Figure: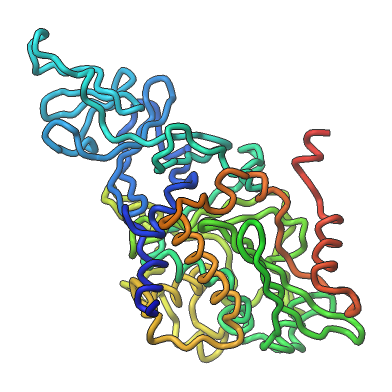
Length: 435
């Protein structure tokens, strides 16, 4: 099969595409619960290339449906959210959160046929501050994914949304590409700048790690490794979880942090970060007491607008060259771009709306990217050809015991054994709460 065909099958997510149909088998994190108010204005929502609206009715239920009224296709974004339904302002037809037409006021009673009209609505679930949407064809949706961070009580969970102007896969692949950390984020740091008890020193001492890669029940895992002190190895473990989740090595295995790269369409992605508030901090000061130049955390947003791409946009964006500071690039930071996320955003958006896979030349550091692409292609094509249910859909518990992180261990310990040792020792906040 041609490289172009492989690329199209990987990157395109609209209805009828192999990847789009596979993704529709999963629950998708779509909206922060706080974005929807009872009887508030409908929200424009783009998911997998479909133009939808989301709203919360008078009873607190959330509806997600095609934005077009089934009558004459006027947009329900203009609708009145009132009395447990959304009412089209064109002729007054009204729909509940399930898409049922509950009122047809411009038709005489003897000509009313509202019981035969249904808006295209998707199944919705709300858990711990996050609204999930199921866009598949099953009459009964699969269970919600048991992703550890998403199971945290809302008070203990930090949720962040950020829109990215590029294809979902090139955005996601930044999270499974560990060698970029030693350049994009810490390229200006030298080994003598780093305290002796900071694991960062091994990254900036050796910026070309080697790798172990494996397929897993939930997706793929990589382990990047470098020599540390004599007889010790510095390990960095991270994961891809079907269909668009990642875990990055941002500190010890006590961190509970998972990210989704939700395709809005082929050229826009919504990053959704779920983090346990009790997780240890991931960045530590240098010997000088200062943080790594350009390593600011957090997000600076533009005001939200009501258009299809109006939510959660950063002030650093392609229109202003991600606010790159060329003087800072010469004298302070490797990139001249402030913030960790801003640096990631800049490089993946700079690739263009959709990366040309025929132009790129993958190297040894891209082995996790190559393996993950193959795994995604196999799963999407198996579902398209034979209806084989993709990983984790029917077994959401597979996600539960997956963590990422970095640590130093005895070099004699095999890499999978080293991972299991960290998993056994890691803090389990959900278990502690249950006890």
